[in-house]
Length: 189
Image 1 (cartoon, one colour):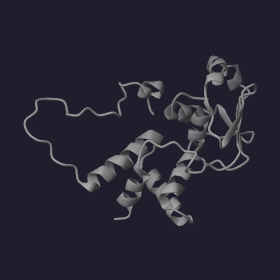
Image 2 (cartoon, helix red, strand yellow):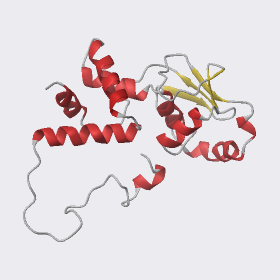
Image 3 (cartoon, helix red, strand yellow):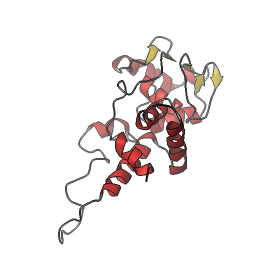
Image 4 (cartoon, one colour):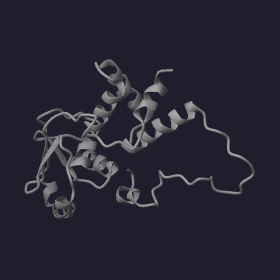
C-alpha cells in the first residue's frame, strides 16, 4: 500500500469505519452493484499507484490475451517493474519502489530503466546501479532484506541484492486483497 508497513496496522487509510465522520442523521443509502465495482476498481488502482488511462490500457491488454481476463489483468499488474522491486523487498511500499525506479537506482538486465510500468518477463534480472549501491538507503535495505520473503516466481540473491524473474506469476501465487471479478464486470458494461 501507499504507506508501507502502516497498512498492516489498524490505522490503515484503506480500512473504513462502519459510519462516516460527522453527525448521523439517518440511514445510509445502500450502495449499488455498480458502486461496489467502482470502489473495487479504484482500490486496485490506488494499490498499484496507477491513473485511470493507464489502468484502462492494462485492462484492454488483458482482454486481448487468451484466457480469463481477470487473471490476465492480475498477472500484468504483478509484472510491472515497480511492483517487482516492491516484491523483491527493495522498497517498503509500491510508491517507494516507483520512486526508486523513476530516480534511476534500478537496472533491468544491466540497463538503467526509469519507467515503473515496464513489464518484466521470464529471465529478466533486476539489480542496483553501481552508484546507488553506495548510498545509505542501499545499506539499510541490505540489512533488512533477510527478514523479507520473496514470492515463488521471483528469486533473490541476498548477498549481491540481485533479483531474477524465474517464471511469470500465476494467479495462485499472487495474494490479492480485492475481487478482480468486480473490475471485469465494471469494464464490461
